[in-house]
Image (cartoon, rainbow, N blue to C red; front, side, top):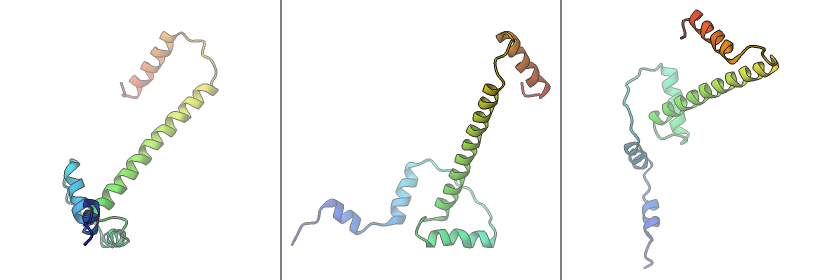
Amino acid sequence: MVKESLDERLFSSYDAELHHNCIMECIEMTRASISITEPNAEWLQSQIDSKEFSSRSDVINDLIRKARQKENENSIEELRSALIAGEKSGLSLKTPEEIIQTVMDKHRENDSL
């Protein structure tokens, strides 16, 4: 009889749900109860059935992660556009103090200061 290694024994009885639960215990999670429409519930189930995700929570967390990443990318794109516009506007003849004052005044007008 050939003795199995520990890895072989672990992977021969691999349980995806148990693995998922162990990972979730290591990550601080907040529970939330949500209501979804029937078409969305069917779509969620299709994602689980495709074996790409092991639970509804995995699908929802992946969607949120992607939305947050896109939001971050949009912020970076806005900053990049502002920097390009600043470079194209050329050199200013204002002193640093005048520039600061102009920015402060603009923010006060917009109630963002």
